[in-house]
Length: 256
Image 1 (spheres, rainbow, N blue to C red):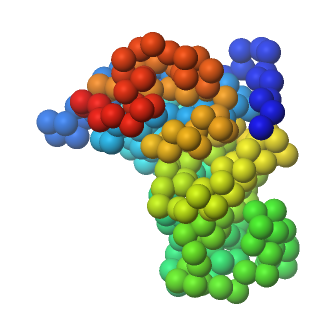
Image 2: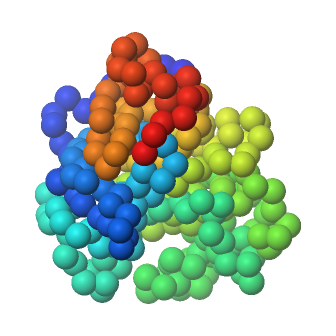
């Protein structure tokens, strides 16, 4: 896969500054600092339970940090109200683990749900846009199916379609390929790259799938003991002599 050129200017869509979060006695984030460039694909790696998903949820206000800041497009959104975060979530989509689809809605209605909630579009326009998005993610003709009828890979595609229906600037991917077979893992990975190329969508991916991450990502950031231990390009991570990085890439367990 040809490596894309990152933006030359230091244009950051997200800046996370000294982020802290604990849950009772479990101190998860201990001062996370991370900048995500507009238009890049960044992958957040680290052991289970290190707080990667907490960072994603903090960006869109589903978890409120104890300390620190989240800056989006140059503005501090850390202490936004729930109503204000609704507007942020139109610009930052999220693919939850497993797709998080509504079981009682068919594929088209799952995808169109954000349009019905947040836009004044007519029902005809909503359905047309939904069908177009489904075609974009390779699910044309599947609009009448229900989640129970779908494979794991198809559920992820529906989730991705729903996450881009409002044309966000950025998507957060929480374990997008977990539990998928190699064929579907490759398809979802290629779809993430395609959305980046065609729509210019910035992506922040949380995954344990290092093989996939190293194929599609521009930069990787490693979370360890509540902080970013290392950040670099694929080449820099692969050639790193850092013990933590080498252990994670080789699949050895990390203490956390």
